[in-house]
Image (tube, rainbow, N blue to C red; front, side, top):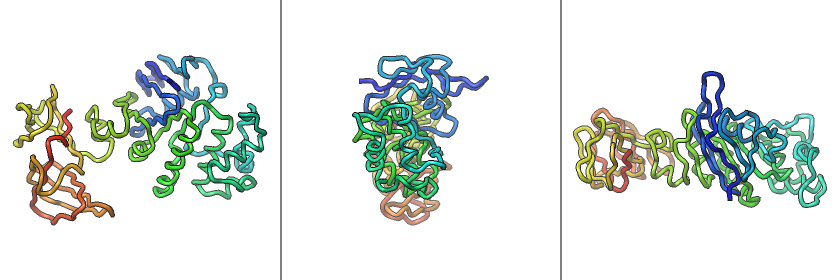
Length: 339
């Protein structure tokens, strides 16, 4: 069942097209993430869903109903902003219950019961009488989430809600947000520029670039089978090799520069070969590349190794620290992606 749908949606600001013919379908209860670099149109797309921006072309639908002309307060959405936007003159409980001033609590609850239920849901029981200024950034984020959920909206929208938090806290809170979303089974659209965050918590991901959707799929599909060079380059570390235009295909082999590699399958019009750093191994693999190890970074659970291959940068991720200097790395045919 469709929770919400965008059909050919376009939004322009003067001569700039911020969102260009975007078509998306988000299932009921799905955790769907818009990910991409700054200026790609992901936040504008979220604002179009919320009703804060008008659609120039196309249509936004909740279920089977168009929301054209419906103001934000009547769209049955809960929104968590990047800045949290908590009211400093209100207590935590008053912030959470703010949306209940305009609608009755669900399931016949009193306003106080609903607020207590949500504070318990976000692990903030006993914090109701505090001021937002007394809370940490992570606690403020959870108050904002509870406030968005208070009226029991049909759609939850989150606009980079963790961007101001430190990396460790972001990791912990994104797990909690996903758990809450799963427990409530609420249709959720999440915006982030953080690829790791998008891959870790989403049911599906839409990768955006220059106002358009480059690929929609599960995190695994987007990572392992990118649909474009942009997706291959943007989502996670990748070695993207551009050969002659196009790269020559010789049966089950592909030629890049002076080297020929065995690959699985063939693609018409191939011009790019991609290999993830974790798929490259020192001194093993069907296909081999002579490299010079330039530098090594220790990541804790692995090493990120920067190599040079005939003037091309090659990134390898390995558990064992290699010596600097000349070496050989290899990969197997099934680990290459052709675009």
